[in-house]
Each structure stands twice: as C-alpha cells, then as structure tokens.
Image 1 (tube, rainbow, N blue to C red):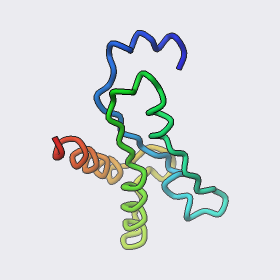
Image 2 (cartoon, rainbow, N blue to C red):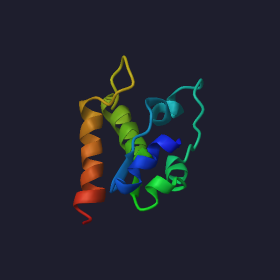
Image 3 (cartoon, rainbow, N blue to C red):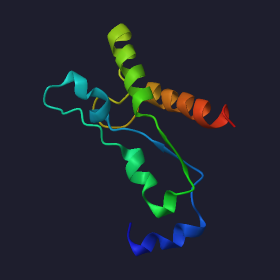
Image 4 (cartoon, rainbow, N blue to C red):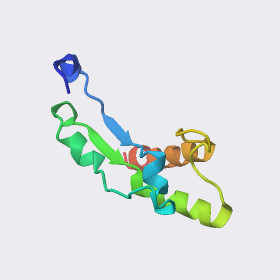
Length: 105
C-alpha cells in the first residue's frame, strides 16, 4: 500500500471477508479460464495494516455452493451479464458472514 494509507493505522478493520471473482468461482466450467489459487488471504495478512484483522476467505464456501446450485438447479450466484453477486450469491455471503463472525463470537 502507498503511504496515503498510513492514516488508517489507527482505524484497522476488525474483519475482512474475501469474495472471489466470478472467474475464480466458475473457472472449472470454462477451458479458457485457468483455475489458479490466488491465495488472497496470504497476501492480505502480509500487509501491516491488517496484522490485527481477522481475515476470512469465502472462496471455497462459494465454489462448493455454486457448483451444487449449478449442477442440481442450473442456478448461478453471479449476475449473468456482469461480475456482481446476484441475490443467491448475496444470500450465501450473508450465510458465510453469519457462520464465521456472528455465530462463532
């Protein structure tokens, strides 16, 4: 991060939830996409600003649920025509948030 972010050292977030891209979730379906483990959590934990922040990666959770939804119901968790989570995806993130942060505290 640039020095401009140093103002946030006194205002660190309590939590970060990593939400993967549409391509990361559906790469297994398209030969044009590589399924790489980008390990966002490792990258973020190496940033001083986030040393005291709890970081949760929703990638595996969303991949597993997205695969089941598509196989059994032909539904996806992102909007068809852009890269934003749809209502199903938003609901899954809410479930993830609840399990990791609300229920566990």
